[in-house]
Amino acid sequence: AGLLPTGGEVAGLTPGDTLQTFQGDDLYQMIDGGADIYHEYGFWQVLSTEYVDGRGKIIKLELYEMESPLAAYGIYSFKVGEGGRSLAIGREGRLEDYYLNFWKGNLQVTLIGQDAEEETVQGVVALAAAVAAKITATGARPELSDLLLREPLAFSRTKYLRGPIGLMNTYLFDRENIFRVRDGFIGGVEGCLAMVL
Image 1 (cartoon, rainbow, N blue to C red):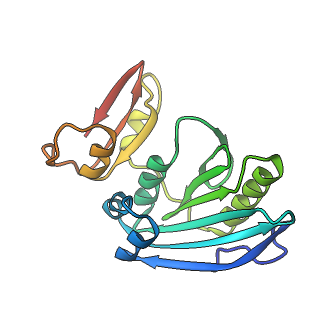
Image 2: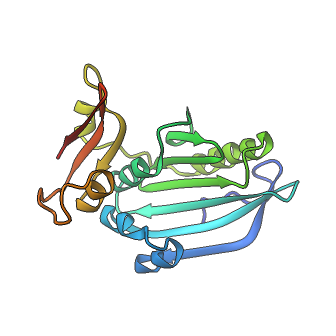
Image 3: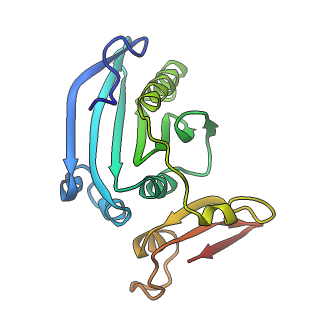
């Protein structure tokens, strides 16, 4: 909770009254049907709250505490889409419409605006920057990323895997863990889907 900007820290945004924390299996109450992937990566807890701008529009902020920076990077890789633009916020800040995701240390941070109006998006970006500035840890990508995320065959639209659920959510070979996946990457390479497990 100490990472949450208080009133006056982000111009035009006021903390809302809602503050919820979900730990362990309680995540299923917040994400119905989508919590398994978080647990595969090593979910500990999430803090969810809202901020309100001067027009009464809401920005939702979710701070996911994962077991390690690798876990935070992994769940981040599943949350971001193919579009949007990169921002220098946290590690690999990515803005897509009115959604902004970044990771830093063992935290994965998601901000969701109420709409795509310019003022809303500016609020999302300002709030994200304020939260990122409060996170002192940095973290690093998995070692495997040094090989796969650079030229000459840099993966694009990359997803970092930490188990079979991540693989099955991306490409279904079988309903069983036939590859016994512990670690890996899936991404695009020159128009093909490539996997390193």
